[in-house]
Image (cartoon, rainbow, N blue to C red; front, side):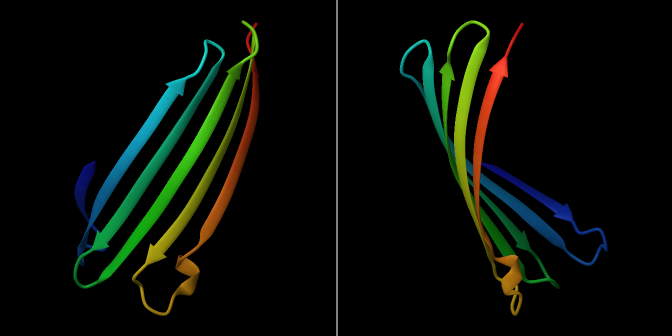
Length: 106
């Protein structure tokens, strides 16, 4: 958990960043491992702004070490955002992200 408070650049208020994070990693074999992560970020704006934003980001990853020079990774992240800012539905969104990777070391 992290908690930070900063002044807004216009010097007319402040906001507080609050972060929570939990992760899990497991190695099934020497070649195969997996990980899961859940991160929550909350921005709480103080007067005169009166707005709170929350970003939720769960993700999973699987890695496979094929041999000494070659490995592969697959991952998925889902993100959704909630905002208390009135009359701005575009600030709230949902996002899916898929990652595939191959790494070669020589």
